[in-house]
Image 1 (cartoon, rainbow, N blue to C red):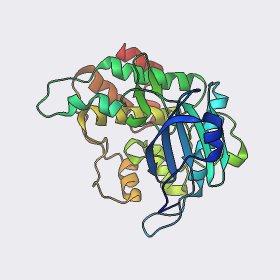
Image 2 (image 1 turned 120 degrees about the horizontal axis):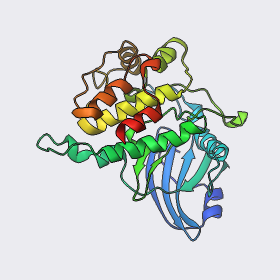
Image 3 (image 1 turned 30 degrees about the vertical axis):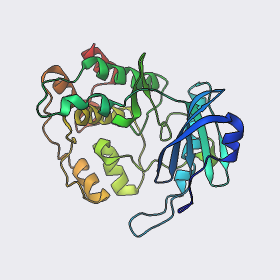
Length: 278
């Protein structure tokens, strides 16, 4: 695949017959396309294995992630999606969600000259989207600002490939190896450091949402470590609880502080977070 222009798999082209298509992302074993067709407006995800390099270990599981997400969408009762296999890995398509993500939505708040405060209604929309998932007995496992799409009518929580809470076909499943460390809860970081894997939990999702709200509002990560630190060094800082002060004013700052509690049992539930914001 390196060196050749990326293309949609034939099976996806046959299913959607695109009238327009745009490559949105192609990195670390994943391609995302925006596709328009007579059938509708879709996000198409295509996975392929990452080969080992001097800087990056081999990651064959990335080829399975789109189909795993498709299986999760099925278990959650979603409609208008499909998933399957192609000769390089797996794929899925699902409705395209229009709108900025959380980080972009709160961009004006991060301007040093700005007096704009983060909008609690935007935070509440993110909470409500995560609460829907938790109410069905699932944990997301990869909560981050980019995965909350602030739409005109509601907020959508996307990228469910790492979600946990129900049966996933064995051929598409793979162990949870943590997520983007900026949003990784201390207990997840500890487990990954000790064993290489962890178990997504709703409590860890709460921590991740707190970290996502914090960085979107202020531009600062929840935990202090060098920007170029290796992944294990980052995780060690998270596991040790080397948190920065939460510099968000008022009740939202107090809420984020609670969400970032080191012990999972000290964090509020998603319903308590929603009640505080509403």
